[in-house]
Amino acid sequence: MTFLCIGLLNTSDKVLSHISSKCLSYMVLYQLKFQNEVNAHWLQFCLNTLGEDPASHTLTPCLMSMISVYKGILLDERIRKADYLLQILVALEDVFKGFCSSSISRLSVTECQAPLPDAASSSHLSCLLDLLEVLVALRIELKLNVSLCKHVLSGILPQVLNLMSSSVPYFVKKQVILVLKRCLLYKAGEDFLPSPPSSYNQQGPALDEELAVLATTLLNAVHHGWLSQVPSSDRSSSFGGANEGSERGPDLVILGAASLSVLKALEIQFHKKIHSSIGQGYTEFSEMSPCMSRLLNFLKQHLGWKEPVHFCEWVSLTFIEQDDDMLEVAKTLLQMYLHSPSLHSTTSEDEKDIWKLPSHECGINPHCVFLFLLKNVTFDASVLLDFLISSETCFLEYFVRYLKLLKEDWPQFCSTCTFLDRSVSLQLPAMARVSVRPVQTASVSHAQESIWSPHEETSTALRPKNKPSPRSRQSDSESSSSLGALQRLVEYDSSEDSESEMSGSEPCLVLSHHARVDRSDIDTHMKNLELTAMRSVFHTTSAGMQVAAATYQAVGIQQKSVQCLSDLQKAINRLHKKKLFPYNPSALLKLLGHVCVLSKE
Image (cartoon, rainbow, N blue to C red; front, side, top):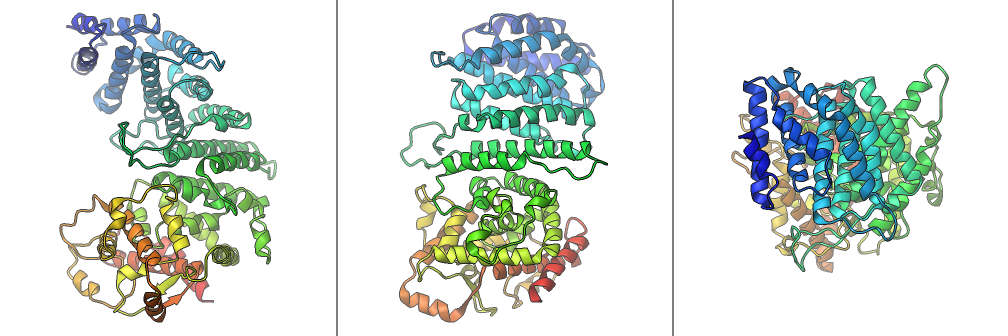
């Protein structure tokens, strides 16, 4: 049976070859699990294929088979406990290293006359990148002290960086960036692992050293202009087909992955420098400023920033569609800021000088990053509550660290809010310069609470070059239904008095009681909310503005931020009292309480 599958791999019929590769992989896994033996014929086939001509028809099926077998071993605890994986990796080590080196160097030719790789070569390279990520996942998850897995991080992936300057297709370069990001985040294999990959703190010093080599190589490449080679084509929503209505704009996925990779490399270098300087006094991390300057110039080129530019907004602009990466970036920037005293300069009373402070010029001021984050979610406490409950983001860790900073650095926060308000007001016409909050009466609808200035809403939507979605042309009455969907982020159906709370007069109620609510389309509702709220502001008549002026009171960013945190505190308190919060939020509530006290002083 093994010989039959291997023979069919060499056929020109891609479907038959793919099915044969799958059958061969399942056969190998079956023998590992139930017969306690490694399929010698499969192993010899892999050795022969990797040592042959790269243009061989069997190369892609061979790589796919290796990926399937390694994934099967990684996902099956019974096979993992045996030493079969070590036998396979050790047997393939030398030939695989040589294959990777020759394949990458052959495609990394940078001369202008270098021929474009054909479809087969691109397919081989894509499969190789998948295999490299699986090997890194084996290294991280199983803590394998195998030379091959270690060499992938410290030897092969640094070579892969050279593909940015080659003529390989766009999708291969994008895959390179994504694999690099996941490896630096210790999240290799997150797409197929049943549970989240191991966290940073659970890794050993050997793995940290291997990643430090990769991080150093990346930062050296950035210093020599690597970011200028990272492409960013127009994103398309037509799944590769022709669609005149496709969204236009930079590919935020590759921009975000490249930015996060550079930041994580900086963080790894940062930690390494801190550990090496223990007992020697404080050592300034001088690499951060020039690296952040190159990163911001790279983003400015692709995002189409227009003067005046506030560099701290890059996080919100780049990661508007990727919450988990945005919060990871915010956490990393905050950590580097806290350990960089040279960035902790006092603010100037002149609004023209505050943006020249080091933390603003580097785009890492924690107060600006947090305020732009709140702006992205329209100061909606229910979204923050969803982040806190979710296990898919690092928001809790970031939020606690930021609240501790906010407690000690409240004057700086207030100054940042003031200057942000002034910078916004200088860019808006008189009629559009309205940032409103409802007077706390029970008669004001929740839909009206989300309406704010056109400038702020445009920053939230962040689609200045994109055509409006068909949803944006729906009636204004849908904004209230969208808000209703947002307020159902957390439900407590088992609570007996939930309905009584819903009938209360609190102006910003996060929780609601709806049994059988489908929350799968919550992102669509959020986008709909943003677009309908924007439409309601831009198309309000002067008479409507006069009515609104009688109902609302203008507030600034600081008031809206404090109100958002206050609403979040009330919602957490409510859930905690009913024993519905997933963990003990006492420390978090205490920090939020400090913020509320400071805001009243």
